[in-house]
Image (cartoon, rainbow, N blue to C red; front, side, top):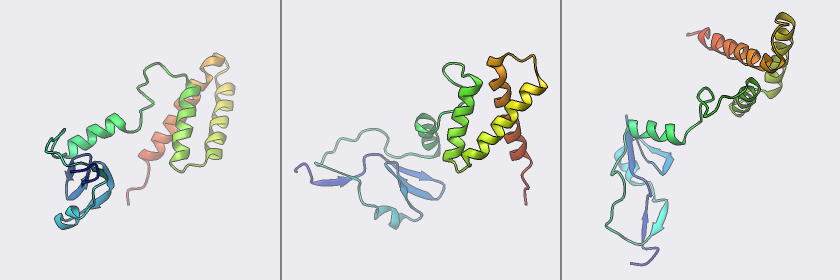
Length: 149
């Protein structure tokens, strides 16, 4: 029983709907039991009979892990973000999802000009809050009005 005697997975298996995979290897999904058993371990260590953590995971465990380690929400920050900070985070997330940064910048700048001209009494520090609300509203409108064909 040496330090390389056992090839194993470091997290438990996940059985969610018809998918089967190891929590430590979520990109290696099996649909049948035989394929699942053939997924090689991702770690090497000595043999032990000590079991740590859960023996298997289900859908609620997967969702809980995603909430803990997944994307962070921008609408529930630990401190109140300014409109400009929200816009910066939103732009970063949209660009990482494939939206063109130049399209976002153009829409943001257009909406800023519109807020400045339509609402001359808005304090300069609050302009970005109005721009963020307008962009959020436009995104929501676009999603709600996608064709459902």
